[in-house]
Length: 77
Image 1 (tube, one colour):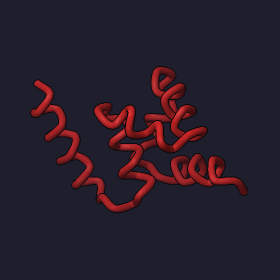
Image 2: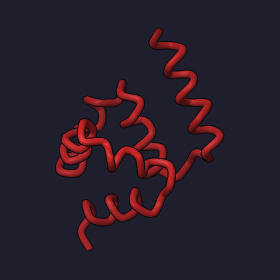
Image 3: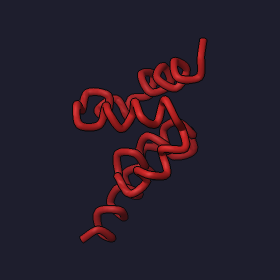
């Protein structure tokens, strides 16, 4: 299985980012990142990409994810 398929499968099996996969405005970003992982840095200001990266790394619990999302919302405005 190639790396892109592994990443997609990891996302599908994780309940946290599943909503991202249903978001048609996010799919072009995801496709860009999947075809060139360096593109992730271009989109790091997007909370959805932050959620994606955290899910792929598996380093944050759902509670930590929620706190990170709240922090991003507070700092943006």
